[in-house]
Image (cartoon, rainbow, N blue to C red; front, side, top):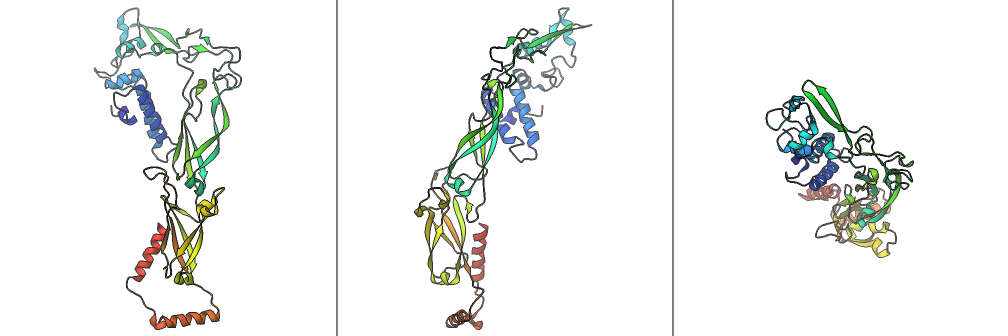
Length: 408
């Protein structure tokens, strides 16, 4: 055996049935082709399903634990004399038991703890767990940063309102199957030169349920559930970002027979903002000021992200940013406590900072008077044609600041 099904599901060899089931659901959600972009998702999903098929079936699990191949003929193995094919590759070997014949399922049950053929399992239930669902919600940067409540439409299965999940029409009930008499399986006897061989299979009349529904519910056709669209309200916590998922237990689709609902995962997608860029818990923006303001210093009102929230106060919507005299291009100024609240960890709820990178604008059109004034200023500062030169290290510092500002 090359596949370790316990390793595929990530469970120990002494895991309980409930632990195996939980591990399967978790793994299946991680590798489902509709959830991940992994090019090998389909193969991984098949491997997870095969592992669960084996470990959730007592017979197959027993074969695997003994070193056999549980996927060969339902319970076979390597074909050797050990724990492989119990018939050594000869399907009719058991005929030597005598004229009375034998039941393949009974033999497997005796070898592997009574979990052999269909007859030992009994009728299967019509009630099954519903599937998990994935829903995506698109938020603005402000909604993601400060939290919101979104109302989403979900196409899903719900319990049939007419039959309440039973699957039968009003006044009708399921009846015991006349062919299998409620066992869910039928036994066929075949004669051979080795003797009578009995094989047990799923009852074709009731499909293994042990009962039939003579009058199915007209709304759900006996499934116990119907497809519909319902609206759910999802609370989005402050600080989420693209790719975060919100787990809602029991909000997925209802299973057949009115079985318990699966879970719902809501994945967050955050739209880009025309002013702010998010960097972790910080917000970044670029502010363009004239060169005179950069040289002399000034105070600039900055509209914050909170201004986009309904009911935002003037104090929350605007912050006064002091531009120091002599501010250079690509300088990053910081306003503390105006970023995004932390989603988790020790700093949960604590807000990051607002970083403002200054871009100094040089005028391109000057009047004669303005040109004369600038020329006079340059003369006073010794910055005429003969006073302009490259200062060692100055350009490097400028470009480093500019690169950091725009690349994050």
